[in-house]
Length: 122
Image: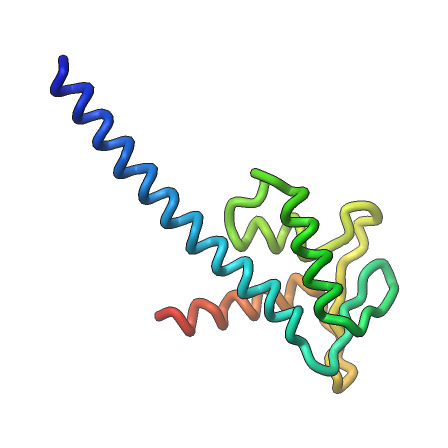
């Protein structure tokens, strides 16, 4: 019986370490995505129809939404779906207009950025 308890404890410890490592990976992905908006040059973040020139303000808003989401956001995909794609209050999609005038949804922008992230860590 004692051996079973020790084995169970070891398995739980290993599993919790793996979960913690995965959490850290997902946190790095999310911070990469937020930082990409924070460092946008010449682009506008459009939220509820209002253009915002300041990438830092957009990043701060996304960090606030992430914090408010609590345990609902476990992965970068969760972050994109639940925090970074649309307004919680109005349901309107967030948009990003680049300096050349091209406008895309923030979801499209963040999905492209996530692919970039994967290509840099391989």
